Image (cartoon, rainbow, N blue to C red):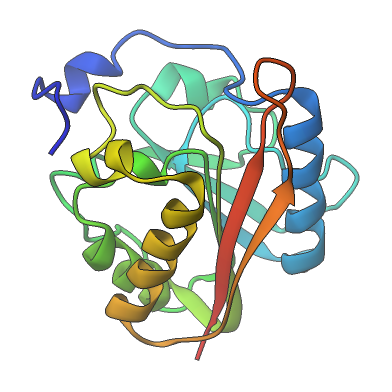
Length: 198
């Protein structure tokens, strides 16, 4: 559980129109998404905000954001639709089976209180062979991150997210990678764990 037990609806009520990683980390994130997500595909942006960090020059059929703040998602130029939904209260996703070609979760996995259930739901709504890419850095709102996240190193974070994939089941080709080495106080690191629906 996080240190801050207040309702997520209260914590995320005010829009935070800031990027949580620097430009170099954003570029690394965007390149991974370019590699994993097919052009003209339908993409689920899980725990979405005002930026998705998808490539600007790739046409997608649609990009659906699922997040906590409607105002933030309205200002996201890449979203074609958005849904306000609290995954920590209800891990079931309001989408049909195999509705998306791929899914992403950008610098937010540390806030999931039901990650195995949520990863299982992502598996349900992504088509066979579709990728689910989870990216994260060493930054977070520490009072809202789960206790396990706060206690682990960056390398252990990658193992933890890989465990979410393994425990939820239905994934193949699991990979974990340091996309960008950070320099303390100078640049942000970026880590990624991804797999494809079996």
